[in-house]
Length: 599
Ligand SMILES: Cc1cc2nc3c(=O)[nH]c(=O)nc-3n(C[C@H](O)[C@H](O)[C@H](O)COP(=O)(O)OP(=O)(O)OC[C@H]3O[C@@H](n4cnc5c(N)ncnc54)[C@H](O)[C@@H]3O)c2cc1C
Image (cartoon, rainbow, N blue to C red):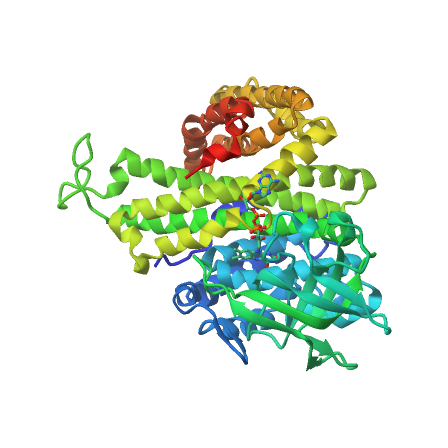
């Protein structure tokens, strides 16, 4: 089992050297407490908590899983105690509203903690992650009374939250959901229906669980325009704010699943449970959209975590494991064989994992900074620009990172050879845990439609231009820099091609709507590699500048440049396939009649 070590040097590199977090926090409204010393202290403490308390429970969670009984769901050994320590450390309140007991720190700082916790134990990190989603929803759309009742408890961590959207017949297509909400005389609602796959739906870590539930009011319009949002607590709050009688909501069963065993994925039955409307009637989905971007960054972190954990495990193994000799002559002549890290193919796997993990960190932190600006930017103009950038980057971060994070996790298993397939090394758990990232919070296919359809084509390419303009400026600034030539030339070419491909798809889509669906996933993957190219070029620039100025960390910065070089030479060329495929048209997918798919 790999022992998780928080990658503090790289976290610092991305935050301060690449994204200038010090300046970023100074520019935000109400982020005075996020001083460099404070930020550093929080990350150090968070790393300690993750390494010492959360990481050791990763394997336990996988082996034991969650156990259902009529008295409730039991989480794996140690989860409850670790969660108590998480509360005592004040972690749930870090980025929450100060009016309800939060510490008011910027949400990008919370993302760093989510990265460390999610990497070392994704199943555990999901419990507070879901609470964060519920907190955001109530913060944004709840009444003052709802905030007083629920926010303080969620923010302290005493109560946890869930998001109840999916039903057995619908996950992507929420417009068809059937859960009913009947109004009661006292202004509350009776919620009836069954939700499935509800993460953290029932457990023994907190005294109460606040379910955020999508349901339909009587006579509501069909489809997505007739969905409303409700708070349905497991235990009804007493006058004094404590958890009171059980509400008519219960866990029917726990799903038996491929991975993330430590997180309880529950079937939740609502049998006339008492609920309270959040936001306006029939606007439930709009209310959810306001925090969905943040929730999706949360899932994107799973891709980063899978790559990082796979890399940490395989790096240690590749230095220890001896097998055959280097083709250019023995590198470990005193040993029975050379360590496998000398072999080019093992290097390919390690460098892919490293390029994915570090590139993912850069993309997630960049996206999180946009979320900070949306929440706390000083002018309406900068908030609007950040909102557009966030909308554009989010589907890319969510889908691209979970896809390539999964690939990197799989490579982790490959580096270990047969041992990778054996449970005790932790690599196969990492693969199993990572697989869900491409499915929940909107599948890759759904994210791709969001990117190409809603974000790019519906804005006539404006959102894409917002990004490619930045890339263009960067390329121009570095056009005469000889050392950057190997990065700038391909980056400039891809930046231009990205716009050209978008135009072509836009034109064909005007004649045939199916073209959008046919091109979407390749377009998304292409976009992911293009965004990575920009970020890797920028990281190379920072590293080259540091080395030119003289540094005691030559090896660290040199590795950055080498990894950037690997990315440009060996991963970016994948865009060629995606470019060709996205233009292949819908015919090769749709011409075959459905009946011809006969078994
Ligand atoms: C472990 C786990 C935890 C989960 N946690 C939660 C949770 O906490 N809360 C919650 O509400 N839900 C949760 N989910 C549910 C999850 O969000 C859904 O499973 C997911 O959104 C997909 O929905 P679906 O399963 O209905 O698949 P479907 O929507 O039936 O999709 C099936 C396939 O069809 C594709 N597809 C569907 N429509 C289109 C289209 N228009 N164009 C192209 N392709 C399309 C999809 O991409 C997918 O490949 C969880 C699921 C799992 C497995």
